[in-house]
Length: 111
Length: 118
Image 1 (cartoon, each protein chain N blue to C red):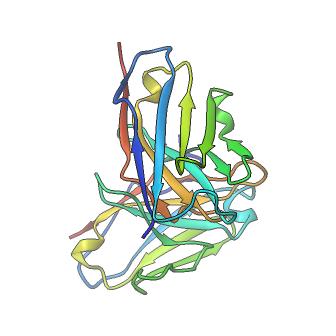
Image 2: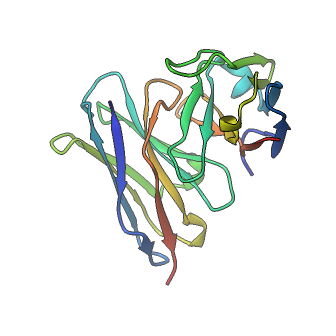
Image 3: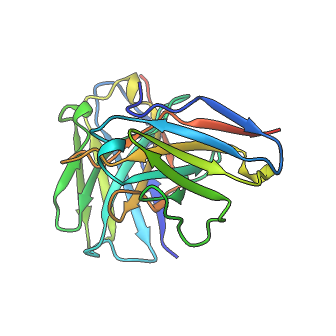
């Protein structure tokens, strides 16, 4: 069982928006502004999409945005495109020597 | 462009030690700004952080792995390595290495599948 809880699946039509949630506790997501999101196409290296809750690395489209409220973080993908279909994982710093806990992943399907 | 590449045996016998190496190119592993990390994904499951090493040699491990993990750096070869002892079938996974600036992972390797089986 993963430390952070994500819905197993999400979907939307091209052009629509979809939001993926990531629920933790006050010891991880709620305690620090260090939530990150990764896009993973099977067989490829995971790609960092968001870090520090809402910061987008250079090269990541601004269609991807992140937020947090309490113990739940969210990734929103606006203007869905076919290439956005992938697995998405959230992660959070969990304090002390625990440098990273992950969610179980959400499979995003573009209908 | 920074690149990371995992290497090691694809098959390890139960109770033995799993060894993996991550070779870093396009940047120095001795940089004071980064941790270097291992993450794995068992078949059909999510990602799991295994542990990280700082350039100074300080190490941080996932408590759930109960002392079976060692991560070390060889700066002369610009690579870092993982040893996971007493493996079982539950350790079968794709193992990724990654660079960790602070509390996220910004560059990842392609991953190496390791199967634990006799």
